[in-house]
Length: 289
Image 1 (tube, rainbow, N blue to C red):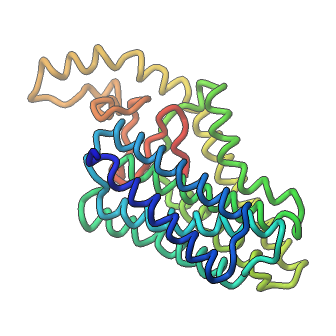
Image 2 (cartoon, one colour):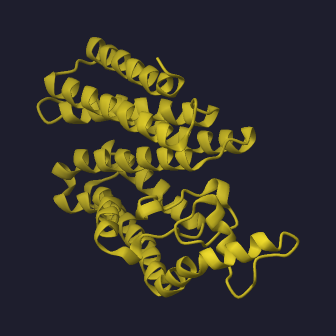
């Protein structure tokens, strides 16, 4: 077995063990097993592909933390799928979700401390966050209303739009508020799942959470739209600027073409951002956190 596939396969095995433990403790029906196994196998396949494409020989310490979060999310997915045919163990689901959300801060901290920040790690972390939010939305929708699915579907709509609209395929500047809004979604949905608040108040909180998400995505869409010409110009002029820079190694890239130095790192629009190691690159418009 190649080194690249070791981490994802171990994750799949741990996922199966977790499903077995859930089956023996709280019970897990056919729907839960199918959802959990499908999730685990898809996670293994996509993570293996991502590692292969990025040239990663093994998972970094931070990636292992994210993989642990992913396994917990698989358990929540299985329990959520099972809940449509039987009563769900709410307390256990809240605990698994809370631990997964708490570890979201640990993997980033680990990446910074070990100097192993990477595009793969950022993308992996983002995808797990997005999927967990979607699962939580699917779970609370029957009691809250189908409108809550907009929270979980918004990022995937953003991705789909980037496949159609070329101007949405670009890297976004780092923005801490984006991470704050993403964290709020998970916390609010966990509260809604645990029925910690009265029904009307839960609805109000979820509506406010959705409003924050719309604002965050709306700001990014507006930025991509207003900078589309600048990014197109940067792409078209990049070869000439890079060639000129290579001929004059003792000089900086000309200021008339700002940001083109980022192309050397594989950026799609040549716009470098100060926190490059900690920001997922939006290659083909897909890395949105």
